[in-house]
Image 1: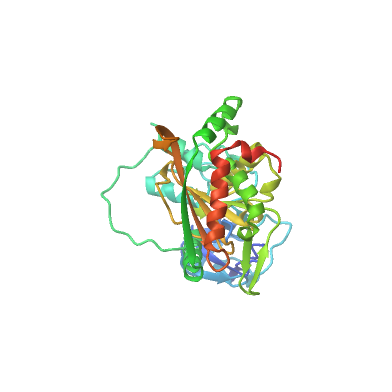
Image 2 (image 1 turned 90 degrees about the horizontal axis):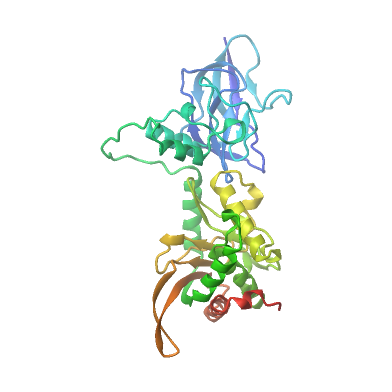
Length: 399
């Protein structure tokens, strides 16, 4: 027998360290070559790592949440024969030891004995629900079980869902994307003096236009939400208020005022909040912008989004949809200086031209970095957006 050290490989994208997300092995387990040993977390997604060798696990680098440097020992195996003491590089002729969950390779559908391809979030939900993932039909590449596959199976009569136990107190370690979110939110609120401005908007005419345009679409997936209209109105307003389409480089103490609008779209996923980006949003039509918002949001939810599509935003829109409430205080997505929050649209009586009328009203809750955006300019920009949304033809009139 000899010792074999599997070191954390370079996960790409300039990664120098990574966080242990989850172990699928324990000390004492016998592991076969290409078995998935666990996941490592990057800013982009979880990455599954496969064992480069067959052997018995004698040591693991740490627990979920621990940070491991690239090149440091990850797993130590006892193996038969003498094949060297450690692994630092992977033979390109062999299968890769890592597989990004966000970009799965096409493989043959897994058998009952093989490991099911899915995300850590789905794997965790299956474990909590007592569902064997081998029983879930996968529609993703190579038989991968997607979130929709799992939801459909778990909600069906055939799902072998275990009886629910009484709720118990448990400790949940803050790791992975949730840790990153916590750190970024804390940094943003600690470093940025937020100025919040809320304005109510009558979107009755906008909603009538949206419904009219959607009535012409045969594909329900292409129907417009309010977000692309708000996006176009924001893009036009930023031409008058370029100081809001700005990012702050704190290391150089420099404000970068951007020409193009790279629109961040805050998106809730099973792994936490992500902000996919529609780059050069100002180059799109209403349908083009709507399509890009749908595409990057869905990619963020199913972990197929690229790292480039999760970075580079210059201003962000955030919306909780029907859960949007009356008002919110959105936290700025550093290094941006502004964020626009969409609240719930509700019908209520409003006085219009001296008469009480039922109108569809919605609040915009915006936050700005008061170090670089004056209150007057922030309010003026939101008022400009309000004007366009209340008279939606202005969004499409050439300047």
